[in-house]
Figure (cartoon, rainbow, N blue to C red):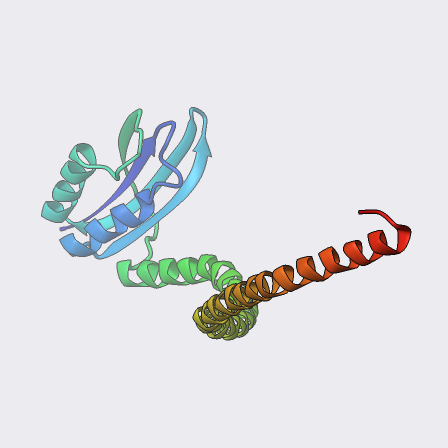
Amino acid sequence: MTMKLKVKIAGPKVHGVGYRYFLMSNAIDLGLKGFHARNRTGENGPEVTALVEGNEETIADFKKLVETQKPDHSQVSSIVFEDYEGDIMRTSEYAFVCTNIQLNKAIPLLLDMRDNLKEMTGDLKELKGDIKELKGDIKELKGDMKAVRKNTDIIPQIGEDIKAVKANTSEVTEEIKGMREDIQPGYARQMQADVRAIKERLGMQ
């Protein structure tokens, strides 16, 4: 025997938590012939209304499920069951409608993702330019380091040249000292002879 039932689920948090899809999935799992659910605002606030159609056993199973299970993050204040006599959409048709609803919700997100990808592409292009510039800086730095290393290699040679200059300076100093010693005795004797000659001319003894 086919039965129809209206379910009203009210509470502060029954919208935006996937309640309709939770009920639909269980209706499909139980094999209910008809199913439809919608969000509405009742006298006591947010409410989910579901219409179901099936045999007596599946309707009983659905009622038990609604009473004992609910989606995560939902907050339920009351659950009311009423007999229903109107038409009810086939469960498969409602599932198709839900698919379209989800697609419509997804389209803006997909468009945002597309725009974000375009922006990311621009950022990647700029990043590639920065990396290329950095590679150029690294190449220039390597050249500078190579030049510094080359100049560093000259330092030992400069040290050897300084040592050679010092040695030559010492040798020249010794030669000058020797020349001074050679010159001084003769120069002193000449001075003495000149002094004696002057004294003789002046009549000084």
